[in-house]
Length: 238
Image (cartoon, rainbow, N blue to C red):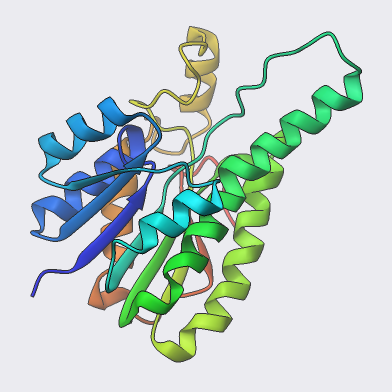
């Protein structure tokens, strides 16, 4: 019987690559995104179910969960740098908007989605959330949100493990082939990001997708509550 997989932010970059991997493995895949045309097109290309959903909106997340009976794998891939336009108001208001956007996009999307489907998880399910090397560095509001994602994941693992679920974060280093930098990555910055790796290459979306598939496999059933660093050695735990 095919597994049911839900991937938030599944229309581009890492989320799309993860969805493609699970779809190729004959899973029944649901992907979400905020733009109807993009969701529809991507779902058709991958052979997946597309659901328009802003994962930071509790009402939309509840409606998403109502479409799923049982869930084997949840991948929280929605997130990114906050797109906050500076206004003419007080600086503290702008700072508050930035931090609220970062937390909403990179932490609360995972918290809300996971809570909405928690009772639908099967006995050997996997919850995988996409983190960032920014949590270990001067990542500002984005890095702080990704660091909080790791802390939340550890608590979630303790909560869900008795029910057979594993919960892990994949902390991605620099990954080429995404729109994370919005076209603003200079050649100098690119070279610096590659140079700090041990293997002297950028990460790929498939590096993350393959890691996600492993964490959802029988060989990873005793791995839970962890942050798995996938960055070519740019950050090490020793």
